Length: 143
Ligand SMILES: [Zn+2]
Image 1 (cartoon, rainbow, N blue to C red):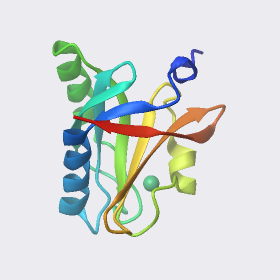
Image 2 (cartoon, rainbow, N blue to C red):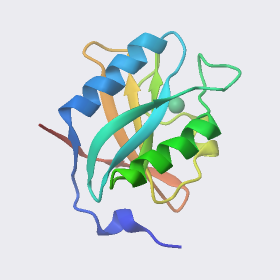
Image 3 (cartoon, rainbow, N blue to C red):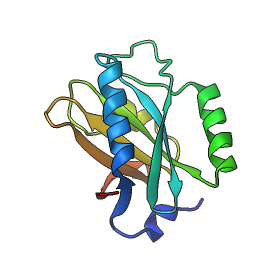
């Protein structure tokens, strides 16, 4: 198994427009959780793509529609981007992984971004899976 995140710089970048798109999606979906794909290259998140949340209890869970996931990957590749991670929202709780998030995370080489609407302005945090645990990864917004 490879651990590309360990080779990354401490901080990684996310475009302002992607943050705005994620927060906008979270607000549109509330009180349900929203979810989507993070597209980019290496250590930069360029774009956020909405996917459907097909979880049954959407107020506290998310499950990315597998068809949206596959389509998103194909579309990203066609444009020279990769799916570098996933985002979802916590409408009422902090931007920290829940027990369910921890239990269901399975992509070691992907970034997990959480946006919380529990505070204003919303808080965005990023985590990487390492040895089965989420570790915080600093995010820097860029234009
Ligand atoms: Zn969560």
